[in-house]
Image 1 (cartoon, rainbow, N blue to C red):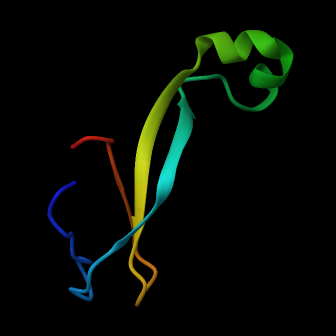
Image 2 (cartoon, rainbow, N blue to C red):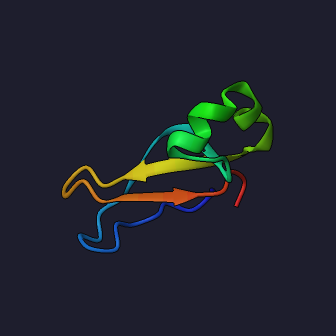
Length: 66
């Protein structure tokens, strides 16, 4: 992300916190427990960059490279 992004609330520059992998589309609750490791095979992983405002703590997520 070449340009400096601003907080939508405070209009101050937001800081990159890091990149995290989020697991999506797996079974949750009791069904997820029953499936165990098989549940991980049904999950997808979505990598997101997390930015936060140093003033108000607002957090935004973006796809890497966008």
